[in-house]
Image 1 (spheres, each protein chain N blue to C red):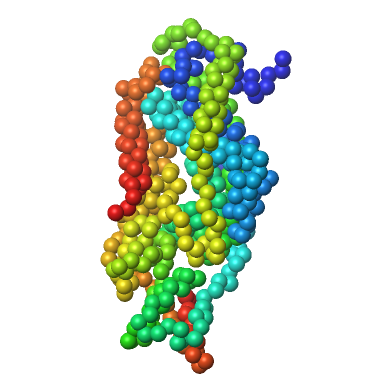
Image 2 (tube, each protein chain N blue to C red):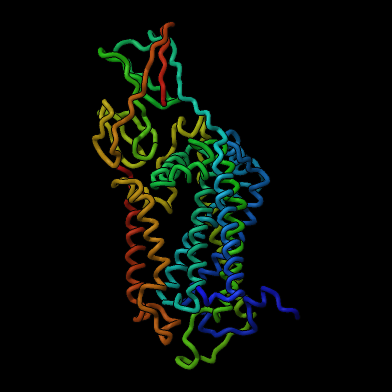
Length: 346
Length: 138
């Protein structure tokens, strides 16, 4: 049989230790599955969605309330996107907490970070496509933040917004980035990321000379496990979609700046930034702090003590404690600020 | 530099041209994307006959958004766009509050609670010869 990309990712056998749930959590594979669900449900939504300020929110109402199974498609798209952020974050935590990012996997770690960042942008652009009173402050605040960047902030604003205030050029730009620009970049990166997993010798384990483990599972067992993860994820998506529908609000009537918003809250994954913005300088808290956090994540494989090869394949190896503690502190702070930001204001 | 072989020199030239054309294309892309489709933004708002706003009245002008106040000292129009990150303020007992990041302003537009730093913008007002009130946002 001629080997395909599928066979590249599923060799005849792999070490049992590489496919243990309690080691990998199945997070990377689940993220790829969610991306697939997003592409399919997103393509279906494109048959009805109209990216103009006057019709965007109405066309979403059409999908949600009139199109047969439209509500289900939209809810699954919404929940896949939210789960993707969670699962990607879990995947990142797993990789750092097991110290798996050391060479030769350092480059793939960076590819993964880029994918995480792009999925946040995809989520935010998709959120804005609702163009209703639930998203308008997130749009105004998010875009005004860009203006606070010194030197090139105003130019960047024009490039992203397409004018001096959010309007129809903004919607079509966000739409194009969402369904094409960011999509194509993430499709390429996902293929590359998955290819590099196999190229780098599969999931991180110590070399056989340091910890020999002859147990292996077959390609069929691997596919069985992947299928199980897909079925469980699908079940979670369907249950969430039925019991907790995707948010929707009244359409924006006049221009974005003139209509009354239904909600002043940022999307949940930016609540921590919204919380920090209450404390002071928008550029410092809204741009600089998130960029510094991203920079720390990028530098983890370069500046912190490296994981010992003999300690790979297990959680919390002693040799990369500093990286683990750094990421744990960042994660806890983000969770704490998110909780603060979601509390009703006094 | 004398060690630079012909092959290395050509390689350097080729790479230089490649990077240069890449940078030019990127610059072109940024310029392509920076066109403002709707650059003519409305900055002048006709609020109608002056007598519609008697002494002591406070009228909300939602299309700016702003608040028109008529006191003994004349008309003032206070912009209701938060000076922090641009959300629209909600009037309350003491002044105005921002729903996004908790900034608040007093009735004159001065900051009473951060994160906003700048006071609310007072918009320019003109009364035309026909007695119409006009507010300018720029």
